[in-house]
Amino acid sequence: MNERVKVYDTKMQKTQASLEAELATIRAGRANPHVLDKLTVDYYGIPTPIQQVANVSVPEARMIQIQPWEKSLIKAIEKAILTSDIGINPSNDGSVIRLVFPELTEDRRKELVKDVKKKGEAAKVAIRNIRRDGNDAFKKLKGSDVSEDEIKDLENELQKLTDKFVANIDKIVEAKSKEVLTV
Image (cartoon, rainbow, N blue to C red; front, side):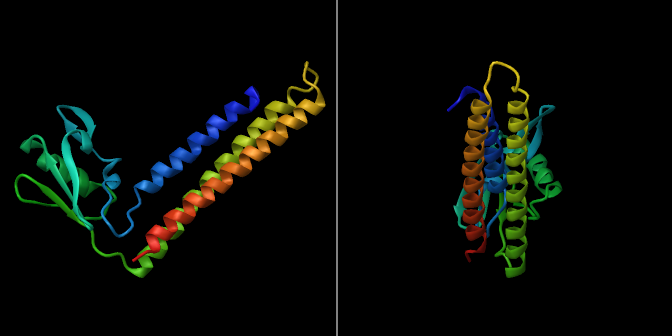
């Protein structure tokens, strides 16, 4: 791969990784500890991810159990979950917080799939924007020590890269949609 194209490859990889991380937080009927990834609690004045102050486990298919290492954090963790967009009320017994995920309705599953597809489209737009930036940069090379044939080759290489990442995103979105629709 040409050095000039590598820069855009890296950007496209980051876009894909960002989409994968975003989709991991969408819950699909069964408990997934990644729904807590974006949540932080105030730990001695520092916003800290829940996974760093508690043991997060999935004892059953539709339950997440959070066991804080310090009992004083229970209220803070509970508050973080309540103020988040997870939409699940935590229950605690004084030492452990449990999140029980209800079975998703058919309508909710379809909404989630729409959301997944929207995020996938946004990622594809980002990939195409990276391609456009690359092509613009290559066109600016005209008149320098780079021939027009080399510029065409760079543009073709970038297009192949774009096609590869768009196909990857389609696969990721398809897999996540399938996961969400599976009862």
